[in-house]
Length: 368
Image (cartoon, rainbow, N blue to C red):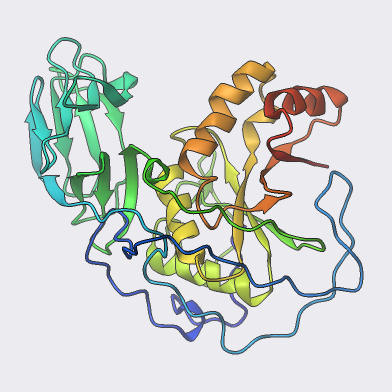
């Protein structure tokens, strides 16, 4: 469950003002001639080492409160972009099958393919960068006034959706870097697809962490999981009833709270590619953690339901995470290897398959 700050006023991120709106929606980075490496603050010294491992970690002393908490960083401090943007759709607007709309530089087009009705992003050579296979056969794409972007068949039946409703004023944007984003009225990405910013980043990853380390599991599932199987959850968060994990104030508050209690690694629940708006939410959280000691990793939840081969693990998980996340200055590393946590079913097969898949290029942690 996301960590609220003790005795915290509703939606007041640790007495810090909400992050200022940024002028460039997609990443709005600070451009510098050479990306400066970000060196994390050394973790606090504790009485008992607590390595990240499959065995339970010892209980560490509760750190003394710090005042003030780390100041929020409003802009990513790595040199990517900036990329010019153009609005494709606002609430209540739509485009038809066969219609594509271009980025300002003309390199990228987004629309519904005339032949098969699939929603896709492609470059000016015709190469498909991203597509929504479930949208096949669609006749129209709509940006609803509630912020949800979706496609429909000629009979009106919905085929695909972005799952970004309850965000009035959101708009669909394409930029010259090859990303399509649904941007909220709060100046934050709700959904994104296209070319990862890592394709443009030539700076270093985060420095390797050293033991002892303190980790905390983090669940960016909300508001989707305020009810389970039709029943409301039995707890009430101090940040307000049914907050959204995509809310930039909530994200900043959680980053501040995790830093306040000296968490070194936040471990975000991850259900796979395109699940639970993972790209937008995790990228926002990592951007907000730049300049603080906090680093991020994911907890691969699907391992409890699947038994993939090492080849499929490499293709479906590790290569995707490398493409989208591990280059980021806020992704956690140990021994110069990105960290990943797994749901462990308690047998050696899990360790063997993931060891073969990672080929010693990942620091794999089995949750006990």
